[in-house]
Figure 1 (tube, rainbow, N blue to C red):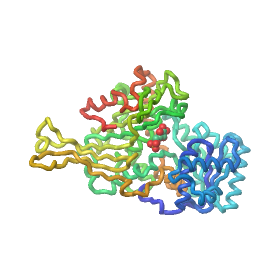
Figure 2 (figure 1 turned 60 degrees about the vertical axis):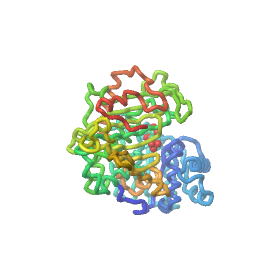
Figure 3 (figure 1 turned 120 degrees about the vertical axis):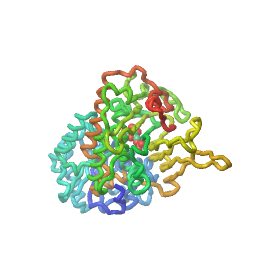
Figure 4 (figure 1 turned 30 degrees about the horizontal axis):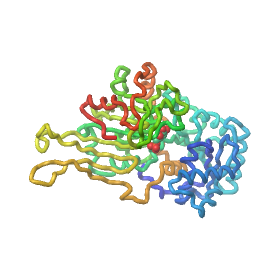
Length: 506
Ligand code: BG6
């Protein structure tokens, strides 16, 4: 993954069709990302973007929507009036129903026309920015109109991009993957996990395998445990309908947190190719010890937020959010302890936690090293030394720090805890591209490294599905069990306290 820099190449001439072009994802992420790629000169020549959705927009109205999206959400905003007209020229719109053959026939005409006018070479990316319930119809529509994926190495090529959720449990994920593979080869299917597009997430492998000092210590001989935290201050907001069906385990753990775990835990790949990296991630996922039903309550904690204060502002309880059931038992918080049964990680617990409406927005991985023998500076049991902790801050305040002990100036041999700290923003003030910029570019380049392969998705579901099933047999009787703006339910602390450990502060 890190070998491939943005400057490695300009994509082939191609175009992009976005299904779900009037939706939130298109507005918040895709259009702003495309605009920034355009400003950076990274789009292929003669690029064309065709929005496809049910909404009855004219081409002009779609352009207005795009301008609004860029003004509101782009990394560089508002839209530059000098450059906007050139970008706007790339935008086209086709209204249509996903199950309507006629709409797909018209889409084909638009594409053929664009191929001719812009010499687009006939290569197309199809981005499914719709709910997964529309995937099947879109797949059929593409196939029947002759737009379906041709082989990855065929010329012209086509590629399919799908967003999570890929299923809601193992069997639905398999069914969805089967449906996707009916029209497209695996190598043409790009499953997005936007965490993999984040610079700081890609840096995990550079940190581990681009430095000599960490890897020799990166195992059960030296590491006491690992904590992975992705905490949000936002609540379910306007996504209550989706979230009710998903919950934090499906929404965050099955994908983002497990992908982070893989990058921390995997063995070195034999090269930086997409499959070499994904093979090693898969091995890591497959080595996670399944949680037995009788251990579920001891190893996994779920929570739901009550009303409270976030950043000094009162916020409502999850059960009071729009489109959320008053008696909802959907979890907005999960903490769990997992073990990887492999040579490197034997006996090392990985503690994962994520939740909405927590005290602080942060995504961080903390690698805590083993304690020293109590012989020298920590001889006095009343004054233990703090452990060494390597913290990888993914967002915000991106960076890496190492907690070490240092002599406090003075006549006595006293040790203070200090930090060696690298902050992205002070070293790289130009800032970093948004995840979707990198991911869209990689699809156009045909590089699948930062996308989830089918077997990875299914391995993650294999672990998560029994937990979901276990939960259906025991309704939580303490929901809501944490106050918005807190660090989560008390039981999440106990998960570590019983092991003689504690979470890093939120
Ligand atoms: C999404 C989840 O995948 O990730 C959201 O569906 C969550 O619920 C979001 O808020 C978090 O992403 P980020 O990049 O803001 O950390």
